[in-house]
Image 1 (tube, rainbow, N blue to C red):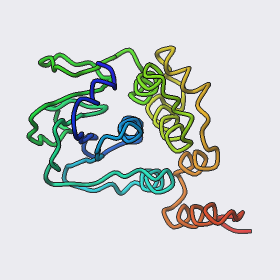
Image 2: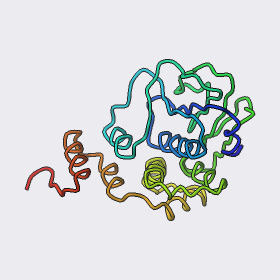
Image 3: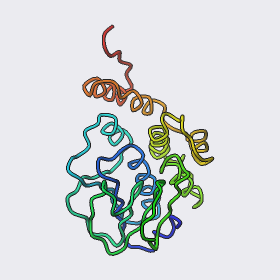
Image 4: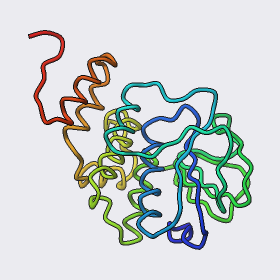
Length: 214
């Protein structure tokens, strides 16, 4: 499967797995940006019992302008694309869909879909999406938000770059032109939510702030 295969559809919904992590969000965002650039109506969603509560993910969505929606029903679309997961898995809300597609880096032994790209030797789905973008002649570094999301997705899914499994992982690590300030904010998620909110607000205003005392 190539990303251009999705352009034949009039509308696409991209589904992250339940309890989303940075890799599924980043991967969905990369595909979302490609489809938007090519004029396709597209939405990013996730389901499950709970909305995102982890501070680093909330800040990721906020600072990278990621249009991720929590839904209980599937928005109308011609095709449903799951990223970093597959329909039928326990952590994927089973929304009904006319056409299914999938991009994933986990081992899969289920039924084959007409549109699917599974590469289980990649350390992250973000690396796979980055490579798919490059294959379409799309530079993910054109948008700092996309590059930063993909870089952070790789970072979190490979144990801080300690488990890079494929050359595509190393390419993303080495060539992504990410926003260092946002990445640092997300990486330092050991701060309390209140402290990160202060840091995030300060960063938006271009101020330097010291947390936890003088």
